[in-house]
Image 1 (cartoon, rainbow, N blue to C red):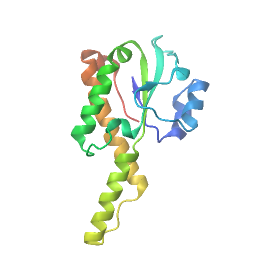
Image 2 (image 1 turned 135 degrees about the vertical axis):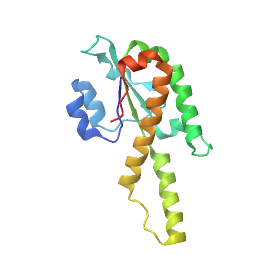
Image 3 (image 1 turned 120 degrees about the horizontal axis):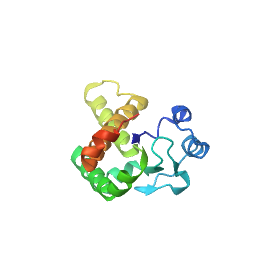
Image 4 (image 1 turned 90 degrees about the vertical axis):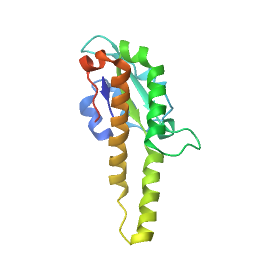
Length: 159
């Protein structure tokens, strides 16, 4: 299993061998929560399983009106992953995800901190990287948990 982040299109061309997958990664994707992109499906050369791309928007990790907390995001990820366990077990899966709400919250926190202390807030690229890592980490944990022993055999990475 391979877990990729949607904010790294420049590296995808060296990772993804299918021209159809490259096209989907290198052009803007309308992120739809927990929807498989059937046009991106192909056979994996490694294990002859179907390769499926699942796109998650940043809003898929939080329901409208929910506070942006790790517990809420983790619960929503867990619920989504559990509904995909059969897909995860029988296919090679690539996740891509958005992180707009998460970056927005950190930017607001930085602005509030700047008002209080005068400290310059983090730049958006740093906030983007921070949220990419934390979302990828939570996805990895929930995928490993859903797959149990099989997750250890297959491996899950964040890139």
